[in-house]
Figure 1 (spheres, one colour):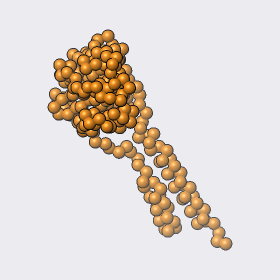
Figure 2 (figure 1 turned 120 degrees about the horizontal axis):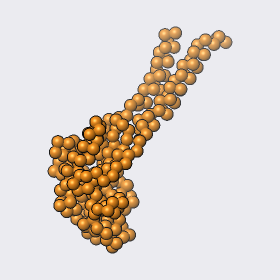
Figure 3 (figure 1 turned 180 degrees about the vertical axis):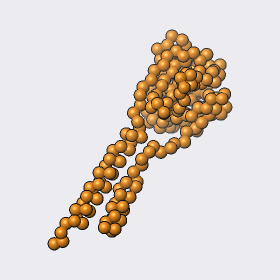
Figure 4 (figure 1 turned 90 degrees about the vertical axis):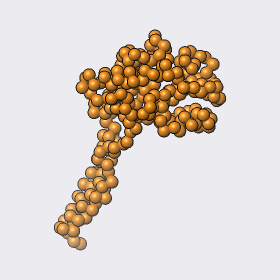
Length: 236
């Protein structure tokens, strides 16, 4: 019986040992804006280089994409350097954030996304309201007793791109991990909330690990039952 216990224990270790039972912790870059801490969840820049190969070949664009401070990107469409309509370009915004502040790089490509026409940083008279916007966005959650969690996006957009009548709109997206919710806020340059919407997120840890855990436990139970059957079966 002792040997049977050892065999069962070994089988359980082999089957269940490698299966994760909780989400792995991940390190996110953190910046402090005033007295507010923003934990950033950078977007996948690889998708940008695949969809627009110029970002993987043009030196100016490549340097911005590969910069560790570049965290978010957005296709703005026919938009000029001042975030106004310009049908002659296809513009992309790349957001850089670090301890010194917020910077939004604008790349104006030809409409077919083949050639770079110009590359500039968005005027700091617009991005200079960064601290005000962050404070207002985080206050939105703090006033309801919630922590704002992971910042998944912060970008300056033409108002027309998000259905707003004003010229400049800040869009912020936060993942409230404790509530399993994703919130999107639209704010004006003074931090006023223009619109909000949210959606419930599925439990990623549950989705990732439920199936392997169930399969692992099932295999272990079957192995134990088989061993017990063999142990009790009369010798031939």
